[in-house]
Length: 124
Image 1 (cartoon, rainbow, N blue to C red):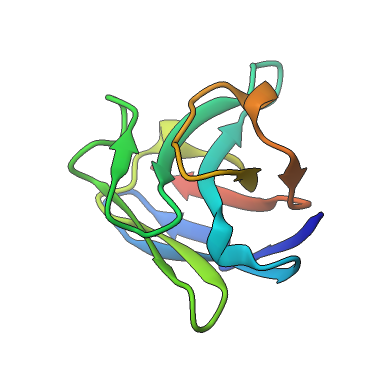
Image 2: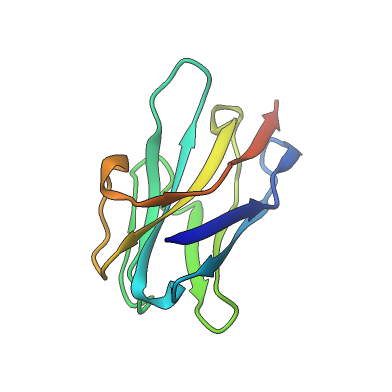
């Protein structure tokens, strides 16, 4: 099992940027594909971005492609989500998740471990 702790959320104006971090601990984090998701009140948890365990492959939802960038540092056991050009509709709780294996998956049910979430609020 991998333990995940997100940080970096907060309040930002539309057009601004935030960088979320997800610190991993427990079993070797470099053997896990990682994903970022978000969930707004009353809505389902949506896939945003994923990265393979080598970092050589990434995948993005259409809603964030070109604005968000996922990366990982396996020495620091940390995964990042750089978010630029933020919009009010990006307001949600953001979660990182880990799944055993190298392949990126978009369905939340494919992930084994989840962080507690960090709130991102974008004001207009």
